[in-house]
Length: 489
Picture 1 (cartoon, helix red, strand yellow):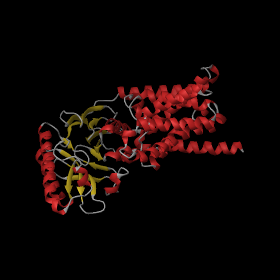
Picture 2 (cartoon, rainbow, N blue to C red):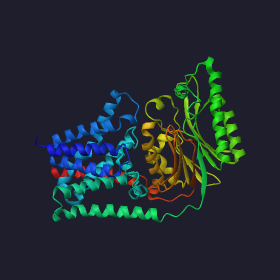
Picture 3 (cartoon, rainbow, N blue to C red):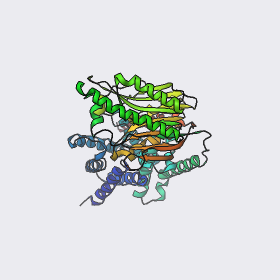
């Protein structure tokens, strides 16, 4: 077969790329992109891109089938679109890089990769899911790049390394192409050293707070009941029966909050949508919650769902923050619902991320999917928040990946995170992305997570400039494309 070697390289590269978008295996992205580029640049552009797209679609479909609970007929076009987005940088590399050449030519592919990932996150419901930057979880020095250029800087370094190394590989590492790959090697090396130094010199926090997350018991409600109630499907004749069951759930959370406080916690956080209350019962419930917070002298961050039975959009997804005096210091209504089921029932807020001043420090709050958008969380860094509270609600197949995504928000904004996850992994994370403790809902152990959480913000470049690096890649790609057309004419 004429292209047997290249097809094998595509197969290996596509498999590793799919893995890199599904799990934290840092080498997979670096090796996978290099293998894909090696084959793409060697094959004729038509067959090469066709095979690349097909193998990427298959690999992504296999690796990420369980990340979205949708029918296969819906999943298939989503993966085809994902493969198309990923294939575009390889096409632009073939069209634009050869005329540019040299070290500058190696930049076409990473600039295109950043532009593709960034624009997908801004223009589609996918947010930053699928970014290869997240594959570097567990590689702390390179993760620190997010404090300067966001996850887009990590995508750039991985992609530039693939582009430059492939060029050297193709020419047998001949000295004549050293000038093309050496700048990349120096930059990646400098990023690793800087990241290591940033971690090594990080001072111990002067202030920390004992925190706890609590989670609902697995046997209090029957399977599917929370979904049914969240959708407002409660008959008038059954309202009192359902109210009594929800009151048991509310009693349980308030009791667990007292237990955690008496065990030493000074902040207690509840997960997203774990606590449900009918709209007419909400004032009375919040009065009880404020009393518990005041009695126990704790900060109480309540993830809750308020249900408006009989209305077209019955579900309000809320975060309510109560201070140790029993005062409500902040309330946030989830702005960005997940496409599909949640979007069909939820009343979205318009308030942006919650940031409030407290006696302990500045606290920010966002709910689950909102933390998948770096630009949504960035105001926490801009407004000097010390702690970011993230109630979340996952499912088993995404529990590790979703936590890992949120860790990068801590690095980007220099803020500690307490994440309370229903059906997922609750965690405490410091401002450098170091996980301090976790609790997995799917284990038989106690689902309460405790930790001493630093309350001390670290200023970051990303908090100041946001996605400027990603936008500069979009602009550079557009300029290169225009210049290519002009010079070709």
